[in-house]
Length: 292
Image 1 (tube, helix red, strand yellow):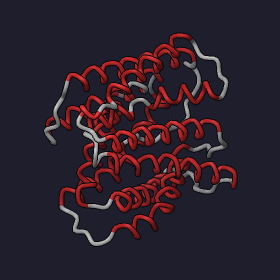
Image 2 (tube, rainbow, N blue to C red):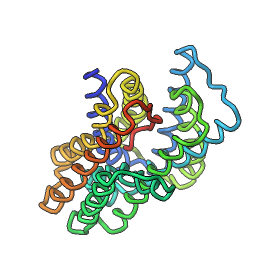
Image 3 (cartoon, rainbow, N blue to C red):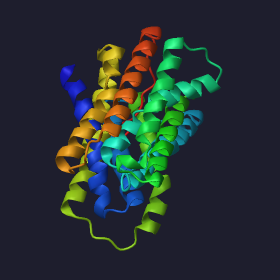
Image 4 (cartoon, one colour):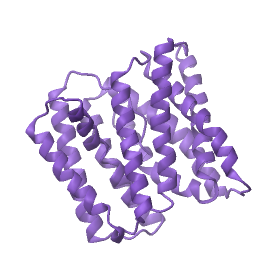
């Protein structure tokens, strides 16, 4: 269990660095579209290897297509954002996804505990602190991160309410394939002439194999074999890994503004996730792909 948990912690936390490195010399749309096409093909092979099937109903395929536009699409937006935002700040803004999910549930007229609502309110104060140009990020980059987080939250809520394939691996394979294929023409059209560096290619390959396949497989295994509250800790451990890698590898500076914003966001995400887990201890959550 701990091997799988640490795999999710480190792999999904490190995808922010991999996105930044891959995007240095590979056009963002081309990088993200080919990433999900190849990852989707590998996941389809995993489905076949497990003796399952890629055949789904039309309604389930339509649901996968919609979620595939939102989740991989959010990752495409993040590729552009990380060209303008330090990866530590980007990871913290994306960490607000659980808070945005609560907002969407409120819009759906769900009644939620006061503890959750208070956590969301304070958490967004932390987001507001992070969304300051003093954090080393441009206004455009911050807005792209917030858009990516909103798309991820909408996709996550949709995946829990739409008729999805019963096998989470099949669902993920179709989501990756549809999202990647839809973005591929635009990725090719906007690529132009480029020469990828060796490090960018290594980062892209890491995103395909470890980020999308190994990390997700470990996550799905954890959902079946570990307490939900333990699994959910990835939501606030991943940003810590991303911040550390940004400081060590990219020499990103850590300011008091980032520290205060990070403390508020991560603490409130932890409170919301823990409280929601207590309320739905026996409910199996819908699978989600990694945010990075």
